[in-house]
Length: 202
Image (tube, rainbow, N blue to C red; front, side):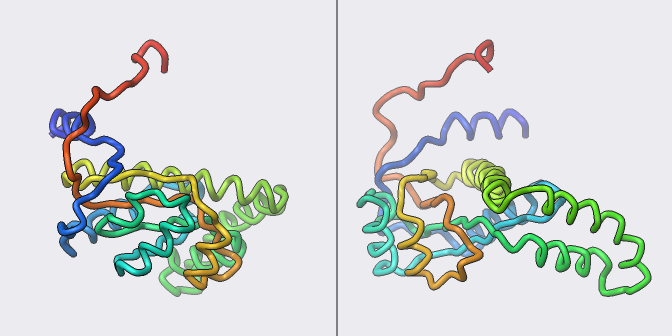
């Protein structure tokens, strides 16, 4: 199993052109989203939102906000990862979820809640956004690995206009688009060998 995972990592590459006629099954999409849900994050807060776009017209619009990068327009699905800035509300929601709505259990979690709130209060809004974006990239890594395991192609993209995408998707201002992940199936295999620094450079 481990060898299979490593082989799948060798197989994956940043696809620049997807086969527009090949679509990811609902089952595989749900597995990719599940990998994001299971991502380990700071305090377990998962301070992000993921929007799934598959309508071809919407993809073309977002391609225009992404410096016309082809893979945004011809992918099967586009995952838009947005960092959250409403962390205090997220903490409250997390504690409710962890307690299962039981008031007595909730009381036992208040100490942990205070630790989380103390962290947020010790940071500026800019620092909190950086922290949330860091969590987004952990989730992105899990999504990329899940795609490789499922033999679904992908290409992480950081070059786009966040304000335009936020407006187009009608996102609340507390959600900041951070990274895009077009997924689908490659048109062709890579023509050049993957380049990576060696283990001694880690």
